[in-house]
Image (cartoon, rainbow, N blue to C red; front, side, top):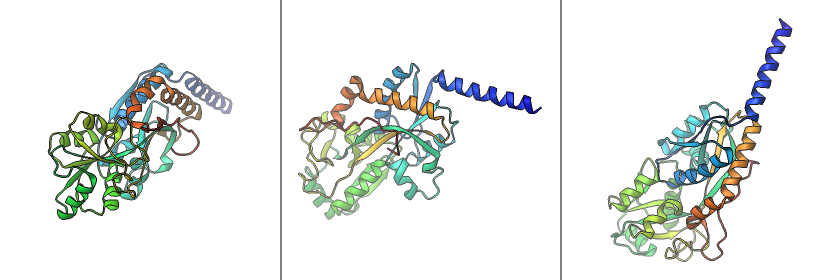
Length: 304
């Protein structure tokens, strides 16, 4: 019986090693914690498309919105650690959420990082017919009308929620924060005139500003973006205290075999370095003056 047990164990180990060597053999699910069209979704789709090419398998995005992204991360934490379920997180879902949600259903120890995908730049934008045309005018208007101005975000605990809190604190204004299930629904309501403004990132809001459907007041960046040349930096706009930067990274559940994580990391590196990814992302993540990409090659050591 002992010999039979050892043989069974050896067969299981050999099968596991073989499965890792042949990984992936089927499509991979990428859990996105917000509605389609927002920053996390856009970045996830850009990276997944190129990663799929590198891995030779399709990566299918599944948008699981709710509770500032924590619903999706809880699902990722419970997933089988075999490399076939990965997720994208950010400074909200994988940092601020532990403070904002005391009963969050996961912890940092539930994940292993695949790597950093991108660093994002916060933008405050308002609807086209909003009375204030500049950041200074917006602050003056908000102070004269406390809590009457509303700013939308992607849910309490999301990175956009952090942007809202940082902005209102730096500006010294009291506004009403409106929670959505993602940045895209919030942006749609902004363009439709249902809300006054949004706390978002250049990745998702640039198109609306470029198309004249929203007006950018300020961007938290040392220099202006090439894609948003008319949106002043926080220093230029007279609010130097509004300084922060977000990030997005890919994760797998704790217990995922290291060889699989290394393979995913290699594919992510290839994806982020690809001409297609850089070309499509450059409009929202490059400095206007230097052209220095803010999309960083991911690191495997430590958290993003």
